[in-house]
Image (cartoon, rainbow, N blue to C red; front, side):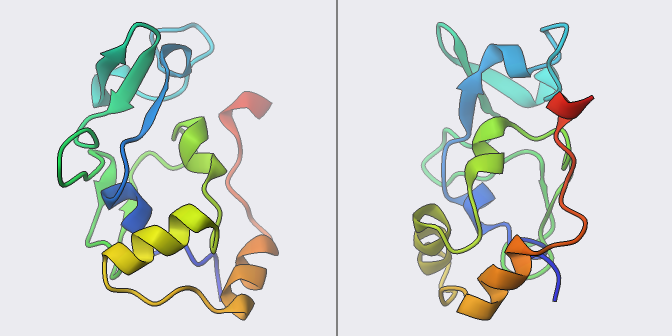
Length: 123
């Protein structure tokens, strides 16, 4: 089994995705496409679509819980990278969307993913 996040994406349709503007392409070392963000606070931006009452990230492709995927995977914000399969945010998002919590083996398989996404900071 591959990473449990592949096909899920419910976290992308549950929370506001906010982060420091320097992660955007407006900064010389930024990687998140600026055009997919909107201003939030003085030094913060949010992914478009995530500040609404029914959040859905503009970068989310497909149907959450079915065939969802991040269309900017590898260029997604640090706050997205911080969500781990089976953590509190994951569990709350899955419950919100009517999905059961991940099984221990799914979490373990995700942690042992042989091809984890590369961080844009590693370049």
